[in-house]
Image (cartoon, rainbow, N blue to C red; front, side):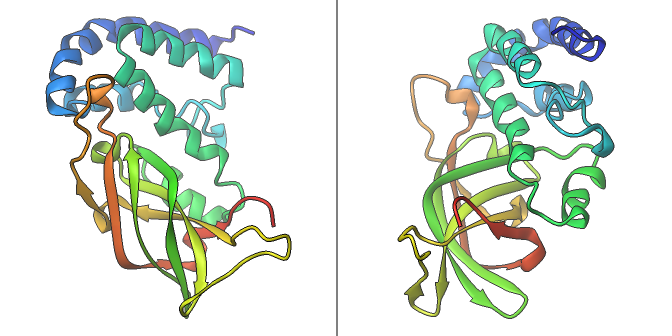
Length: 217
């Protein structure tokens, strides 16, 4: 399963090991990954392991990806968890139009993304998109991300929308982190450095091309 790209990433992780170790304690104290460590992970391409090569990523196979995460997590669990969160969002964005995917990933070479799935927010239909309101817990890595991906239930006015099979109509929304309020709630004894605080949107407009129907239709 080993490839040249995988070996290159494993070598980068080995080179970064002293830096990751040096920042492990401060990450626990800050309750987030310190900016110098984030910068080093970005520069090493460790937030683009799953991203397609056409968008500047490494397009690793799942087992190769897991091997990289394992290598980071052996050094520091918070860094490994944030690397996981920062990479997996590319798996969910395939329903977006290519131009939107390029806006997030290709046009911003140093972009880091994150995601928080539950609880659902509210996506109110409006002209050109949705107005989104909600609070999402466990938003790992939110303080070093440029974009954050959350799930919402669709509403038409005050009416929640459901599929014929009974499940709520769920919409995934990719929103710039600048639109969120981050509330520092992550005061825990383990993985404190993952920065898994709450993120809040209050009636934020999300254009149609930055969201998509999520899950079983």
